[in-house]
Length: 461
Image (cartoon, rainbow, N blue to C red):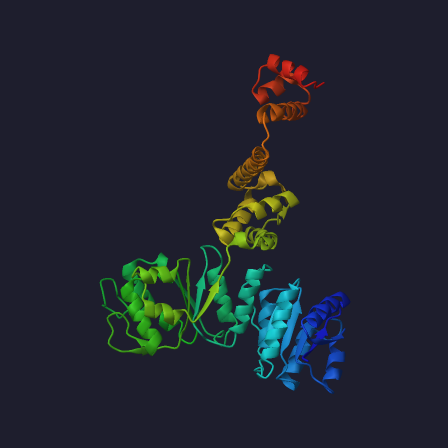
Protein backbone atom coordinates (compact mmCIF):
# COMPACT_ATOMS: atom_id res chain seq x y z
CA UNK A 1 0.00 0.00 0.00
CA UNK A 2 1.29 3.49 -0.87
CA UNK A 3 2.35 5.72 2.02
CA UNK A 4 1.82 9.47 2.27
CA UNK A 5 3.61 11.62 4.83
CA UNK A 6 1.82 14.79 5.95
CA UNK A 7 3.76 17.74 7.39
CA UNK A 8 1.78 20.60 8.95
CA UNK A 9 1.84 22.30 12.34
CA UNK A 10 -1.97 22.56 12.16
CA UNK A 11 -3.39 19.36 13.68
CA UNK A 12 -6.81 19.92 12.09
CA UNK A 13 -5.29 19.95 8.59
CA UNK A 14 -3.37 16.77 9.31
CA UNK A 15 -6.54 15.13 10.66
CA UNK A 16 -8.80 15.86 7.67
CA UNK A 17 -6.10 14.83 5.18
CA UNK A 18 -5.44 11.61 7.09
CA UNK A 19 -9.13 10.70 6.95
CA UNK A 20 -9.53 11.56 3.27
CA UNK A 21 -6.37 9.70 2.20
CA UNK A 22 -7.20 6.67 4.35
CA UNK A 23 -10.61 6.44 2.66
CA UNK A 24 -8.78 6.55 -0.69
CA UNK A 25 -6.62 3.57 0.32
CA UNK A 26 -3.39 5.25 1.44
CA UNK A 27 -1.32 4.68 4.54
CA UNK A 28 -0.54 8.00 6.22
CA UNK A 29 2.00 9.25 8.73
CA UNK A 30 1.85 12.77 10.17
CA UNK A 31 4.53 15.19 11.36
CA UNK A 32 4.13 18.55 13.10
CA UNK A 33 7.48 19.96 11.92
CA UNK A 34 10.08 19.58 9.19
CA UNK A 35 12.91 18.41 11.44
CA UNK A 36 11.02 15.25 12.42
CA UNK A 37 10.52 14.48 8.73
CA UNK A 38 14.24 14.78 7.98
CA UNK A 39 14.99 12.41 10.84
CA UNK A 40 12.41 9.89 9.60
CA UNK A 41 13.78 10.08 6.04
CA UNK A 42 17.06 8.61 7.27
CA UNK A 43 15.26 5.31 7.92
CA UNK A 44 12.45 5.16 5.33
CA UNK A 45 10.81 7.08 2.52
CA UNK A 46 7.13 7.60 1.67
CA UNK A 47 5.61 7.38 -1.78
CA UNK A 48 4.56 11.04 -1.59
CA UNK A 49 5.18 13.86 0.88
CA UNK A 50 2.65 16.68 1.44
CA UNK A 51 4.04 19.70 3.30
CA UNK A 52 2.81 23.06 4.53
CA UNK A 53 5.04 26.11 3.92
CA UNK A 54 4.82 28.20 7.07
CA UNK A 55 5.75 26.16 10.13
CA UNK A 56 7.77 26.83 13.30
CA UNK A 57 11.47 26.17 12.82
CA UNK A 58 12.36 25.00 9.33
CA UNK A 59 9.70 26.04 6.81
CA UNK A 60 8.32 23.95 3.97
CA UNK A 61 10.46 25.60 1.27
CA UNK A 62 13.68 24.79 3.12
CA UNK A 63 12.44 21.23 3.62
CA UNK A 64 11.63 21.02 -0.09
CA UNK A 65 15.16 22.12 -1.05
CA UNK A 66 16.76 19.50 1.20
CA UNK A 67 14.52 16.75 -0.15
CA UNK A 68 15.32 17.80 -3.73
CA UNK A 69 19.02 17.35 -2.90
CA UNK A 70 18.88 14.26 -0.70
CA UNK A 71 15.78 12.42 -2.02
CA UNK A 72 15.38 13.69 -5.61
CA UNK A 73 12.90 10.97 -6.59
CA UNK A 74 10.39 11.84 -3.84
CA UNK A 75 7.38 13.83 -5.11
CA UNK A 76 6.54 16.73 -2.78
CA UNK A 77 3.21 18.57 -2.83
CA UNK A 78 3.44 22.02 -1.26
CA UNK A 79 0.32 23.47 0.37
CA UNK A 80 -0.03 27.01 1.67
CA UNK A 81 -2.63 29.58 2.66
CA UNK A 82 -0.44 32.29 1.13
CA UNK A 83 -1.39 31.59 -2.47
CA UNK A 84 0.42 34.28 -4.45
CA UNK A 85 2.38 34.00 -7.68
CA UNK A 86 5.84 34.10 -6.09
CA UNK A 87 4.94 31.27 -3.69
CA UNK A 88 3.74 29.09 -6.56
CA UNK A 89 6.78 29.78 -8.75
CA UNK A 90 9.15 29.37 -5.81
CA UNK A 91 7.64 25.96 -5.02
CA UNK A 92 8.03 24.69 -8.58
CA UNK A 93 11.53 26.11 -9.00
CA UNK A 94 12.65 24.34 -5.84
CA UNK A 95 11.36 21.04 -7.20
CA UNK A 96 7.77 20.67 -5.97
CA UNK A 97 5.62 18.14 -7.79
CA UNK A 98 2.51 20.26 -7.29
CA UNK A 99 1.21 23.30 -5.45
CA UNK A 100 -2.03 23.24 -3.42
CA UNK A 101 -3.62 26.49 -2.23
CA UNK A 102 -5.52 26.51 1.06
CA UNK A 103 -8.40 26.21 1.60
CA UNK A 104 -8.49 23.25 -0.76
CA UNK A 105 -11.05 20.72 -1.90
CA UNK A 106 -10.29 17.32 -0.35
CA UNK A 107 -11.10 15.52 -3.59
CA UNK A 108 -8.57 17.72 -5.38
CA UNK A 109 -5.95 17.00 -2.71
CA UNK A 110 -6.48 13.23 -3.02
CA UNK A 111 -6.32 13.47 -6.82
CA UNK A 112 -2.98 15.31 -6.60
CA UNK A 113 -1.57 12.64 -4.29
CA UNK A 114 -2.71 9.91 -6.68
CA UNK A 115 -1.05 11.77 -9.56
CA UNK A 116 2.17 12.13 -7.55
CA UNK A 117 2.16 8.39 -6.83
CA UNK A 118 1.96 7.64 -10.54
CA UNK A 119 4.96 9.91 -11.12
CA UNK A 120 6.98 8.60 -8.19
CA UNK A 121 9.66 7.04 -10.34
CA UNK A 122 10.38 10.28 -12.21
CA UNK A 123 13.32 12.24 -10.85
CA UNK A 124 12.79 15.91 -10.21
CA UNK A 125 15.30 18.34 -11.68
CA UNK A 126 17.05 20.31 -9.02
CA UNK A 127 16.40 24.03 -9.41
CA UNK A 128 18.33 26.48 -7.28
CA UNK A 129 17.47 29.80 -8.90
CA UNK A 130 15.41 32.07 -6.70
CA UNK A 131 12.52 33.73 -8.49
CA UNK A 132 13.05 37.35 -9.51
CA UNK A 133 10.64 39.95 -8.26
CA UNK A 134 7.88 40.33 -10.84
CA UNK A 135 4.97 42.62 -11.38
CA UNK A 136 2.44 42.00 -8.64
CA UNK A 137 -0.33 39.64 -9.70
CA UNK A 138 -3.11 39.21 -7.16
CA UNK A 139 -5.26 36.11 -7.30
CA UNK A 140 -6.68 33.75 -4.72
CA UNK A 141 -9.49 32.49 -6.98
CA UNK A 142 -9.04 28.90 -8.22
CA UNK A 143 -8.79 30.06 -11.84
CA UNK A 144 -5.89 32.37 -10.97
CA UNK A 145 -4.20 29.64 -8.96
CA UNK A 146 -4.20 27.58 -12.17
CA UNK A 147 -2.43 30.47 -13.92
CA UNK A 148 0.17 30.68 -11.11
CA UNK A 149 0.68 26.93 -11.31
CA UNK A 150 1.26 27.11 -15.07
CA UNK A 151 3.77 29.97 -14.71
CA UNK A 152 5.64 27.88 -12.17
CA UNK A 153 5.70 24.80 -14.38
CA UNK A 154 6.94 26.86 -17.34
CA UNK A 155 9.67 28.60 -15.32
CA UNK A 156 12.44 26.35 -16.67
CA UNK A 157 11.38 26.47 -20.32
CA UNK A 158 11.26 28.85 -23.27
CA UNK A 159 8.23 27.32 -24.97
CA UNK A 160 5.78 29.48 -26.88
CA UNK A 161 2.68 30.42 -24.90
CA UNK A 162 -0.71 31.60 -26.13
CA UNK A 163 -2.73 33.64 -23.62
CA UNK A 164 -6.50 33.91 -24.06
CA UNK A 165 -8.57 36.42 -22.12
CA UNK A 166 -10.99 39.31 -22.41
CA UNK A 167 -9.65 42.84 -22.71
CA UNK A 168 -8.42 44.14 -19.38
CA UNK A 169 -7.77 40.76 -17.73
CA UNK A 170 -4.01 41.34 -17.42
CA UNK A 171 -2.55 39.40 -20.34
CA UNK A 172 0.60 41.53 -20.58
CA UNK A 173 1.15 41.23 -16.81
CA UNK A 174 1.06 37.43 -17.10
CA UNK A 175 3.35 37.51 -20.14
CA UNK A 176 5.81 39.63 -18.17
CA UNK A 177 5.64 37.15 -15.26
CA UNK A 178 6.34 34.26 -17.65
CA UNK A 179 9.44 36.10 -18.86
CA UNK A 180 10.63 37.16 -15.40
CA UNK A 181 10.40 33.58 -14.14
CA UNK A 182 12.16 32.06 -17.15
CA UNK A 183 15.80 31.37 -18.11
CA UNK A 184 15.59 34.51 -20.30
CA UNK A 185 14.84 36.87 -17.41
CA UNK A 186 18.18 38.72 -17.72
CA UNK A 187 17.36 39.75 -21.30
CA UNK A 188 14.74 42.02 -22.84
CA UNK A 189 10.96 41.68 -22.61
CA UNK A 190 9.54 43.53 -25.61
CA UNK A 191 5.80 44.06 -26.07
CA UNK A 192 3.95 44.97 -29.25
CA UNK A 193 0.18 45.38 -29.62
CA UNK A 194 -0.96 44.40 -33.11
CA UNK A 195 -4.24 46.30 -32.76
CA UNK A 196 -2.47 49.57 -31.92
CA UNK A 197 -0.33 49.77 -35.08
CA UNK A 198 -1.46 50.72 -38.59
CA UNK A 199 -1.33 47.61 -40.79
CA UNK A 200 1.19 49.15 -43.17
CA UNK A 201 3.66 49.67 -40.30
CA UNK A 202 3.40 46.26 -38.61
CA UNK A 203 6.10 44.65 -40.75
CA UNK A 204 8.57 47.46 -40.11
CA UNK A 205 7.82 47.42 -36.37
CA UNK A 206 8.49 43.70 -36.13
CA UNK A 207 11.46 43.28 -38.45
CA UNK A 208 12.94 46.78 -38.71
CA UNK A 209 13.98 48.51 -41.92
CA UNK A 210 17.02 49.64 -43.83
CA UNK A 211 17.72 53.25 -44.69
CA UNK A 212 15.74 54.22 -47.78
CA UNK A 213 13.45 51.18 -47.61
CA UNK A 214 10.43 53.47 -48.00
CA UNK A 215 9.53 57.14 -47.86
CA UNK A 216 10.52 58.47 -44.45
CA UNK A 217 13.01 55.66 -43.69
CA UNK A 218 15.93 58.04 -43.18
CA UNK A 219 17.93 55.72 -40.92
CA UNK A 220 18.39 52.02 -40.22
CA UNK A 221 15.94 50.89 -37.55
CA UNK A 222 16.01 47.69 -35.53
CA UNK A 223 12.66 45.92 -35.21
CA UNK A 224 11.15 44.31 -32.14
CA UNK A 225 12.64 40.91 -32.99
CA UNK A 226 16.18 42.30 -32.86
CA UNK A 227 15.41 44.23 -29.68
CA UNK A 228 14.13 41.04 -28.03
CA UNK A 229 17.05 38.83 -29.14
CA UNK A 230 17.86 36.44 -26.30
CA UNK A 231 14.69 37.44 -24.49
CA UNK A 232 10.94 37.42 -25.01
CA UNK A 233 8.69 39.08 -27.59
CA UNK A 234 5.10 39.56 -26.45
CA UNK A 235 2.67 39.91 -29.36
CA UNK A 236 -0.60 41.23 -27.96
CA UNK A 237 -3.83 40.92 -29.97
CA UNK A 238 -2.14 38.49 -32.36
CA UNK A 239 -5.51 37.91 -34.06
CA UNK A 240 -5.23 41.39 -35.64
CA UNK A 241 -1.93 40.61 -37.38
CA UNK A 242 -2.22 40.96 -41.19
CA UNK A 243 -2.00 37.69 -43.14
CA UNK A 244 1.14 38.67 -45.06
CA UNK A 245 2.93 39.46 -41.79
CA UNK A 246 1.70 36.14 -40.37
CA UNK A 247 3.57 34.41 -43.19
CA UNK A 248 6.81 36.23 -42.34
CA UNK A 249 6.35 35.52 -38.62
CA UNK A 250 5.92 31.81 -39.37
CA UNK A 251 9.22 31.76 -41.26
CA UNK A 252 11.04 33.44 -38.37
CA UNK A 253 9.62 30.94 -35.91
CA UNK A 254 10.67 28.06 -38.17
CA UNK A 255 14.13 29.31 -39.23
CA UNK A 256 15.14 31.80 -36.52
CA UNK A 257 16.13 34.40 -39.09
CA UNK A 258 14.61 37.23 -41.14
CA UNK A 259 15.39 40.23 -43.34
CA UNK A 260 14.72 43.83 -42.42
CA UNK A 261 12.31 45.64 -44.73
CA UNK A 262 14.44 46.67 -47.71
CA UNK A 263 17.35 44.53 -46.51
CA UNK A 264 19.34 41.74 -48.15
CA UNK A 265 21.31 40.45 -45.16
CA UNK A 266 19.63 37.76 -43.07
CA UNK A 267 19.55 38.38 -39.32
CA UNK A 268 19.55 35.48 -36.87
CA UNK A 269 17.65 35.81 -33.59
CA UNK A 270 16.81 33.67 -30.58
CA UNK A 271 13.45 34.90 -29.30
CA UNK A 272 10.72 33.33 -27.20
CA UNK A 273 7.24 34.23 -28.44
CA UNK A 274 4.33 34.83 -26.09
CA UNK A 275 1.14 35.75 -27.92
CA UNK A 276 -2.19 36.94 -26.56
CA UNK A 277 -5.68 37.59 -27.87
CA UNK A 278 -9.23 38.23 -26.76
CA UNK A 279 -10.50 36.56 -29.94
CA UNK A 280 -11.17 32.91 -30.75
CA UNK A 281 -8.25 32.02 -33.02
CA UNK A 282 -9.85 28.73 -34.06
CA UNK A 283 -12.77 30.71 -35.48
CA UNK A 284 -10.37 33.09 -37.26
CA UNK A 285 -8.61 30.07 -38.80
CA UNK A 286 -11.95 28.75 -40.09
CA UNK A 287 -12.75 32.19 -41.53
CA UNK A 288 -9.39 32.31 -43.32
CA UNK A 289 -8.24 35.30 -41.26
CA UNK A 290 -5.48 33.47 -39.38
CA UNK A 291 -3.01 30.91 -40.67
CA UNK A 292 -3.63 27.40 -39.39
CA UNK A 293 0.10 26.54 -39.32
CA UNK A 294 0.94 29.70 -37.38
CA UNK A 295 -1.84 28.95 -34.89
CA UNK A 296 -0.38 25.52 -34.18
CA UNK A 297 3.13 26.97 -33.94
CA UNK A 298 1.98 29.47 -31.28
CA UNK A 299 -0.44 27.18 -29.47
CA UNK A 300 2.20 25.05 -27.70
CA UNK A 301 0.91 25.98 -24.25
CA UNK A 302 -2.33 27.89 -23.77
CA UNK A 303 -3.29 29.89 -20.70
CA UNK A 304 -6.80 31.20 -20.15
CA UNK A 305 -7.17 34.28 -17.97
CA UNK A 306 -10.52 34.48 -16.17
CA UNK A 307 -12.73 37.55 -16.44
CA UNK A 308 -12.99 39.57 -13.22
CA UNK A 309 -16.64 38.51 -12.81
CA UNK A 310 -15.36 34.91 -12.59
CA UNK A 311 -13.03 35.73 -9.69
CA UNK A 312 -15.10 37.97 -7.43
CA UNK A 313 -13.21 36.73 -4.35
CA UNK A 314 -10.20 38.70 -5.62
CA UNK A 315 -12.01 42.03 -6.06
CA UNK A 316 -11.50 43.34 -2.51
CA UNK A 317 -7.74 42.70 -2.52
CA UNK A 318 -7.38 44.09 -6.03
CA UNK A 319 -9.31 47.23 -5.09
CA UNK A 320 -7.19 47.77 -1.97
CA UNK A 321 -4.05 47.36 -4.06
CA UNK A 322 -5.21 49.83 -6.72
CA UNK A 323 -6.41 52.38 -4.14
CA UNK A 324 -3.02 52.26 -2.45
CA UNK A 325 -1.20 52.49 -5.79
CA UNK A 326 -3.22 55.45 -7.07
CA UNK A 327 -2.84 57.27 -3.73
CA UNK A 328 0.91 56.79 -3.94
CA UNK A 329 0.98 58.00 -7.56
CA UNK A 330 -1.09 61.09 -6.70
CA UNK A 331 0.67 61.65 -3.36
CA UNK A 332 -2.53 61.65 -1.30
CA UNK A 333 -3.94 59.56 1.54
CA UNK A 334 -5.18 56.13 0.51
CA UNK A 335 -8.94 55.56 0.56
CA UNK A 336 -10.63 52.73 2.47
CA UNK A 337 -13.69 50.89 1.15
CA UNK A 338 -16.72 50.50 3.39
CA UNK A 339 -18.20 46.98 3.63
CA UNK A 340 -21.25 48.03 1.58
CA UNK A 341 -19.08 49.62 -1.13
CA UNK A 342 -16.99 46.44 -1.27
CA UNK A 343 -20.14 44.35 -1.67
CA UNK A 344 -21.31 46.52 -4.59
CA UNK A 345 -17.92 46.19 -6.29
CA UNK A 346 -18.25 42.41 -6.02
CA UNK A 347 -21.76 42.48 -7.51
CA UNK A 348 -20.79 44.64 -10.51
CA UNK A 349 -20.23 42.81 -13.81
CA UNK A 350 -16.93 44.58 -14.73
CA UNK A 351 -17.08 44.42 -18.55
CA UNK A 352 -13.64 46.10 -18.62
CA UNK A 353 -12.25 43.59 -16.11
CA UNK A 354 -9.22 44.40 -13.93
CA UNK A 355 -8.32 47.48 -15.97
CA UNK A 356 -11.77 48.95 -15.32
CA UNK A 357 -11.45 48.23 -11.59
CA UNK A 358 -8.07 49.98 -11.56
CA UNK A 359 -9.54 53.03 -13.31
CA UNK A 360 -12.48 53.03 -10.88
CA UNK A 361 -10.10 53.04 -7.91
CA UNK A 362 -8.17 55.93 -9.44
CA UNK A 363 -11.47 57.81 -9.92
CA UNK A 364 -12.41 57.16 -6.28
CA UNK A 365 -9.02 58.42 -5.09
CA UNK A 366 -9.77 61.76 -6.73
CA UNK A 367 -13.55 62.04 -6.40
CA UNK A 368 -14.57 60.38 -3.10
CA UNK A 369 -14.90 63.17 -0.49
CA UNK A 370 -13.70 61.33 2.61
CA UNK A 371 -11.16 58.71 3.56
CA UNK A 372 -13.89 56.07 3.87
CA UNK A 373 -15.54 55.27 0.53
CA UNK A 374 -19.28 54.67 1.03
CA UNK A 375 -21.64 53.12 -1.50
CA UNK A 376 -22.89 56.60 -2.45
CA UNK A 377 -19.35 57.55 -3.50
CA UNK A 378 -19.15 54.84 -6.17
CA UNK A 379 -19.33 55.80 -9.86
CA UNK A 380 -22.84 56.14 -11.38
CA UNK A 381 -22.46 53.07 -13.62
CA UNK A 382 -21.96 50.83 -10.57
CA UNK A 383 -24.88 52.35 -8.64
CA UNK A 384 -27.17 52.12 -11.69
CA UNK A 385 -26.22 48.49 -12.25
CA UNK A 386 -26.95 47.73 -8.59
CA UNK A 387 -30.37 49.40 -8.79
CA UNK A 388 -31.21 47.49 -11.98
CA UNK A 389 -30.12 44.23 -10.37
CA UNK A 390 -32.25 44.89 -7.28
CA UNK A 391 -35.29 45.58 -9.46
CA UNK A 392 -34.60 42.46 -11.47
CA UNK A 393 -34.19 40.37 -8.33
CA UNK A 394 -37.53 41.64 -6.94
CA UNK A 395 -39.37 40.96 -10.19
CA UNK A 396 -37.77 37.53 -10.54
CA UNK A 397 -38.88 36.61 -7.02
CA UNK A 398 -42.40 37.84 -7.71
CA UNK A 399 -42.50 35.87 -10.97
CA UNK A 400 -41.47 32.68 -9.16
CA UNK A 401 -44.11 33.24 -6.46
CA UNK A 402 -46.80 33.95 -9.07
CA UNK A 403 -45.96 30.82 -11.05
CA UNK A 404 -46.22 28.76 -7.87
CA UNK A 405 -49.62 30.25 -6.97
CA UNK A 406 -51.01 29.55 -10.45
CA UNK A 407 -49.67 25.98 -10.49
CA UNK A 408 -51.43 25.34 -7.19
CA UNK A 409 -54.73 26.48 -8.73
CA UNK A 410 -55.10 29.56 -6.54
CA UNK A 411 -57.83 32.07 -7.44
CA UNK A 412 -58.47 35.74 -6.64
CA UNK A 413 -54.72 36.32 -6.59
CA UNK A 414 -54.90 40.08 -7.17
CA UNK A 415 -57.48 40.91 -4.44
CA UNK A 416 -55.49 38.83 -1.97
CA UNK A 417 -52.14 40.45 -2.65
CA UNK A 418 -53.49 43.96 -3.25
CA UNK A 419 -54.27 44.43 0.44
CA UNK A 420 -50.82 43.21 1.46
CA UNK A 421 -49.04 45.37 -1.11
CA UNK A 422 -50.99 48.51 -0.22
CA UNK A 423 -50.45 48.00 3.51
CA UNK A 424 -46.68 47.56 3.03
CA UNK A 425 -46.55 50.50 0.62
CA UNK A 426 -48.39 52.89 2.96
CA UNK A 427 -46.41 51.95 6.07
CA UNK A 428 -43.07 52.24 4.27
CA UNK A 429 -43.95 55.61 2.70
CA UNK A 430 -45.13 57.05 6.02
CA UNK A 431 -41.99 55.80 7.77
CA UNK A 432 -39.79 57.47 5.13
CA UNK A 433 -41.77 60.72 5.43
CA UNK A 434 -41.71 60.85 9.24
CA UNK A 435 -45.50 60.32 9.33
CA UNK A 436 -46.39 63.28 7.08
CA UNK A 437 -49.44 62.06 5.15
CA UNK A 438 -49.38 64.71 2.42
CA UNK A 439 -45.73 63.98 1.60
CA UNK A 440 -46.34 60.21 1.73
CA UNK A 441 -49.31 60.53 -0.64
CA UNK A 442 -47.14 62.43 -3.15
CA UNK A 443 -44.40 59.79 -2.92
CA UNK A 444 -46.92 57.02 -3.57
CA UNK A 445 -48.67 58.90 -6.35
CA UNK A 446 -52.06 59.26 -4.66
CA UNK A 447 -54.10 62.24 -3.55
CA UNK A 448 -54.38 63.08 0.16
CA UNK A 449 -58.01 61.85 0.25
CA UNK A 450 -57.08 58.53 -1.34
CA UNK A 451 -54.41 57.94 1.29
CA UNK A 452 -56.86 58.81 4.09
CA UNK A 453 -59.41 56.35 2.68
CA UNK A 454 -56.79 53.60 2.32
CA UNK A 455 -55.66 54.11 5.91
CA UNK A 456 -59.21 53.43 7.09
CA UNK A 457 -59.71 50.46 4.73
CA UNK A 458 -56.47 48.80 5.84
CA UNK A 459 -56.96 49.75 9.48
CA UNK A 460 -53.60 51.53 9.62
CA UNK A 461 -53.26 53.97 12.48
